[in-house]
Image (cartoon, rainbow over the protein chains, first blue to last red):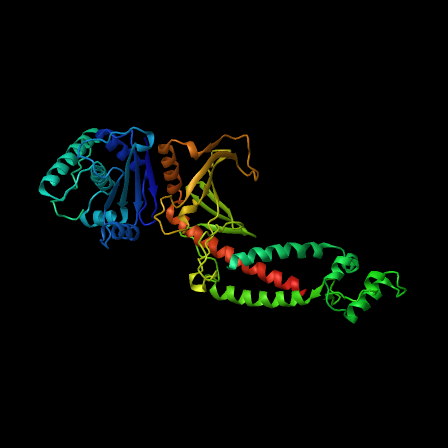
Length: 168
Length: 288
């Protein structure tokens, strides 16, 4: 039902209201407003620790998703019978990693947050990019979501999903 | 555990303070109490002579003291206070403790807050003040009771080595007052550090570094909280409104970086006051 936003880092100044507004727009486009979802902003140190713990990769990254439902068929929303099941899971945003990336590539930081959050929500909904086929499905979904976002907000965002096998 | 010691010291200090505030003629009164004598081990001639001086007679009309085979545990140097063997041991212990605390003291002067905050100290209370474009922002916090309890289990030996001692961190509640020139009221934010962010356990904590608990308008310059002003509690607040309030504070320099620096400042101030307290306690015990 609600988006739980947490900012656990001090490295990057964050505009919470704007981030919430953009992510709520994404949730509306995807049709998952009735689900709880956590969005947790962390620095490099913490996302590296989480990446190492859960994926055995001891490096910082931009986004990590922890789905509440682990075996969802991509594109199908979970069927929930109880209030507590209305939960998609949590997305950890590596905001320090993203900020540095944006600085290097002269990109807008808040736009990048929206793009990686769209990517993270797709993972919560069962999308993956391990194979060419999975990648195509996920890319199309992200493109559809961001096109709608662009139409509603006047932005020009492009999907994050890289070629299959890329480590994102 | 340094702080469990601090609590014991604190209790002792409260007892001492009661003795100290009593008139000097009452100081010897406990000597006549049977319960006090019952705890004593030896009779000291000096003690007795004091009793004789105050009683003005050795006629024996105070038989409980004179007839007792057990004596009084303390002597007086004429300063109006007791001096027991326990006090001596206590003073030695305090001396060692003060040395140890000074050794581990990170900051000999208080760390500076970035962002041009002026600091005003009044005992355990501190105020940080900053003016931006005619708007005055005041942060008030008190270091008393600002150290959250630790819940870590004791080791197999029942004690932990000094290296494993959890670092003591002061995370005080703090009040932010934003005052605009054109208004008679300040917008007041009651903020705190959620407990799971202060280093208990191994899990990934998911609370913000600091959080707003309540928001209210209060008359400028009123020290007391006006209960009749509407108080917005954030427990049941629309999240979007909460985020705007957090952004409002961030625009005035109260963000996660500020909150981290406030912990550092408060921890240094708490440690400074703790050492000062131990020194006062030591001086009090030794009558210096």
